[in-house]
Amino acid sequence: QVQLVESGGGLVQPGGSLRLSCAASKTIFSIDAMGWYRQAPGKQRELVASITSGGTANYVDSVKGRFTISRDNAKNTVYLQMNSLKPEDTAVYYCHAEISPRVGWGFYDYWGQGTQVTVSS
Image 1: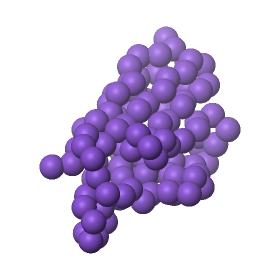
Image 2: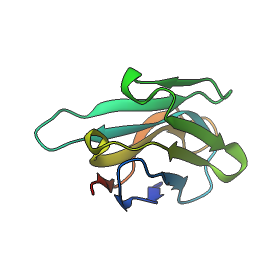
Image 3: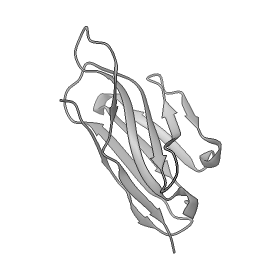
Image 4: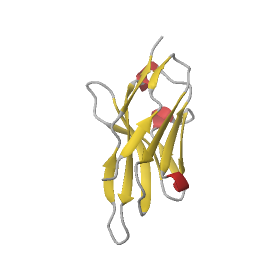
């Protein structure tokens, strides 16, 4: 069973930085798009940033210029560097990946367990 294991959340003051990481737990055949979503209390889950297998990144407008998504294909890992954090960035952050676990299999959606990011003074 493939799992996505997240790390890097925590409490940070406004203006601070955090780096989230998300790695696949076992050897897999291929990963297509990867991304980070977040869900704040009382709000719907939203896509924060995504990155294709070729490295093309997209961001929600509210984080452009502050967040950077990247991936290491050799390590099956995606990162989210978050700078200039604001209280409104407070949420549970989930990583997502489209994974083909084995040769000849299709791609399926996998989710991390979620990591809390709290921005507060």
